[in-house]
Image (cartoon, rainbow, N blue to C red; front, side, top):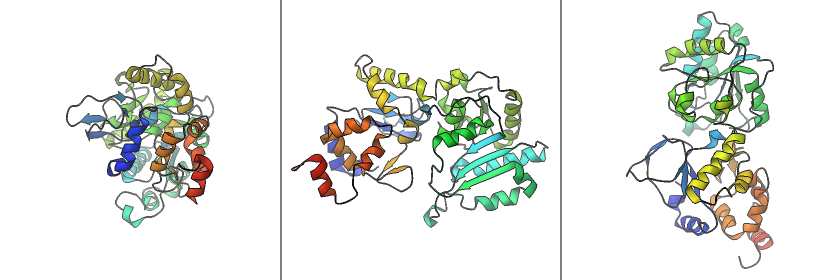
Length: 359
């Protein structure tokens, strides 16, 4: 949306194509997709894009959810929580429906220990229609103090949307028996991929299972609910089947762990652009932190998900400063490293110092 309004930026991206391939990570399904040849490939699930004109377009059927880092791994340690849910306090996550599912479990006599990790965005009156700002009021109205001892709602109103680093977040996954995701529209959910990478089953609607191949979208890996009324039953089944933690998740982890999907990325790049496997060096550099880097914003918003370097300046660096860019690509977080080298002001002095006079 930003690029199509900026002709100069479009021209600069076109100029990159001599030395770079340009991908578009869609971050959501798009059933009214219009192919734009400015991008050499799209990154999305195989069923997530429907080109309105029937144009066949280059697709890499991977996205952020396929690159869970190695801290998300199976563990034989203590499973303190029965049920884990991780979701921002936004309405499309269907949090009240999740609360009702836990309410039904408790009403049926199941004494499950639940952890809900819920980052809460700063209050913005314009976002009242999309954010569940009164989440604690809803929670307090549905559960007794005794039930809250077993059901922890951990709302976090700082460092939105990533209050924890990933190794800390991974600890919650490794300490839980099952993961629940109550969204009814969101596909290829990264938090569900973290669960599968951690070797724990997921309960959710069909959209949540979309990142797995069709033959794996079933028990004992995925417990699909057709309606919210089925969630309690599916959770009980998942907890029962995984009580002893003996299910082999390796064939599922192949689709969500960066150690496995890096080679898949190279295969897709070879298929689209050739070079006979020479993409491995690039993949070794590029695959660090892709689970979060692919969802970042340049110069938009605030918080840990935002890079202050505006997109036009990033593209100019890719075009004019190959040496600098290749140096930062060797870092585990290239965009952050480039951001560090990019003084906020005065920009003119920075361009003289880094890029040389006359740039």
